[in-house]
Structure formats: structure tokens, C-alpha cells
Image 1 (cartoon, rainbow, N blue to C red):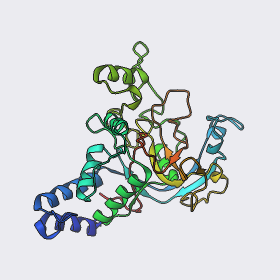
Image 2 (cartoon, one colour):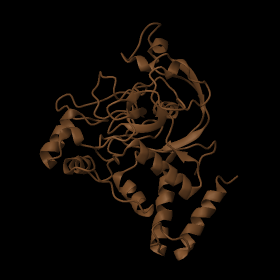
Image 3 (cartoon, rainbow, N blue to C red):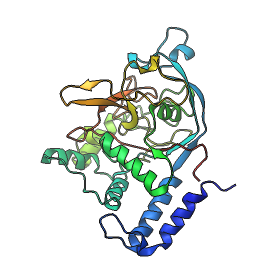
Image 4 (spheres, helix red, strand yellow):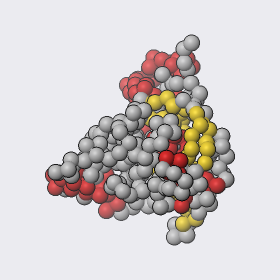
Length: 322
């Protein structure tokens, strides 16, 4: 039985419609429609289907290393709790800044811009390399996934943190680091990374390009994927998820498809904003909690400067898209 026939029919109409579907802003052309259709086909073609299942979410070392053991010093990764997820799909890659720029154009939205030149310079440095991740606020990430939902008719959204962790751990296995082999590897002589970017890699890049090492983001497919086919989930920029951040949420999380708190819990009084969860790692180093599959980061949803957080979208459908 063919999957998602309505979506495929919709894309075919978009390709054939010419000027019948104007681009937002009233500047529709057949070329724009064709570009959009091919863009959507590529984005949906890069989705990885994740069959649902049950797993133990959080710091799982008590199950792998004996009672009382733990892999993380962070209290918000506990208690370990059982979660059952429905099937879904998730992006193979972080959204690239080129793809995010295309979305802004198609949606009739202005280019990313901050109120100070040094902030714009930070953004330019973070997106210096071709096919490196888009750097976005939580609201921008959420809007992008919702735009994909509108354009495709598929239930796109930001993943929940449970979905993100289940996928990073290759359907809930006891995997600490979301790399090709579950660990970080680097050359013993040079310190250069084999399956993630080390500080030596970033320093060499700074010397070659002038981009500050802490701002360096590499192409989303530079290093090998996880066994499940996902790229860059251990580092190269934190990733936004849909959940509000609550350090005590795991103690009350429902077992079936947890969505996080219904509203903001922890308020950043300096900014008047509630915290959202972000997952993965920025520039992690072996031995640190950041970058572990169950690490829970957080930040206000709309910072007034780029902080390097990225995005990948999910599709909440029990059937594979392709």
C-alpha cells in the first residue's frame, strides 16, 4: 500500500501548477514553485523512520553498571524512567543555514538580523561553512517545523526530548554518545577527531579561516552517522526540542509519549522568559556530561544574540514518509 498518497499528490500539483500558487509576498513564479517542490522532496527524503517502542529514559548507568552507578553528575537526568513512544520520523541532519535561508525566502520573511553588528558577526561566523547548521532561536526553530507542516501536509514539529533521546540512542539502546560507535575517537598524535570535532580541529580551522574556534560549526555530514543513520547528534550545536524545561519533570513524566510540562516552569528573571530544553552538545569533550545522549541542556527561547543552537524536525506519523 502506497504511503502518504495525499502528500505525493500535493507535491505533484505544486510542480505542475506554475503561477497558480503564488509565493508569499505576491511574487510567485513557476520557478519558485518548482524550487519549493524539490526542496520539500529533499527534506522529506532525508527523514529517518523510527519505529516506536519502550525504553528507559535518563541516566541509565544504574542498569548497565550496577545499582547506584551513574554516568552523569546532573540531577535533572534522573530518575531513570520507562517511556513508550509511538513511531515517528526525524531529520537525518540538522537543518543547514542554506536551507533555513531558503525557507525565509519562500515564507516571505526577512533575513536573520540582530540589533548589534557584533551579534551579526557572530551569526556569520557560526554559519561560515557551507552546509553547516542553521543557528536559530527556539521560536525560529518551531516556526520552521510548522512551515514544513503547512507546506507538506505532514505532521512536522520539533521533536520532544523523549523522541530525540530515543533516536540518539538508536531506539533506546544503552548508548552514551550518539556517534558511529557510541564513543568519541581522536588521533592520539594530533588530537584531531575521527568521529567528532575536537578542540584541535577547531583551533586549526580558526588559524585557517579566522573564525573564532568556539564559533566553528562544520558541515552537517562531516562526520559519520549513528548506526541508525543520524548525523551530528553528539555535537556541532545543541538542538532545540519542544519541551519546556523542568529539572524535576522525570519524576512525574507519563509513560506514553511524554510531551513535557504544559507551560513554562523555570523563569529566567534577567530576560523574563521561561526555559526550553535543548539536547546534544555544542563543543563537547570526552569525560564531560555535555554531548551524552541523555544530557539535558536548556536556554531561554529567544536570546537577543546567536548562541549556536540548531534544529532538526520530526514527523509524528506512525507510517514512514517515503
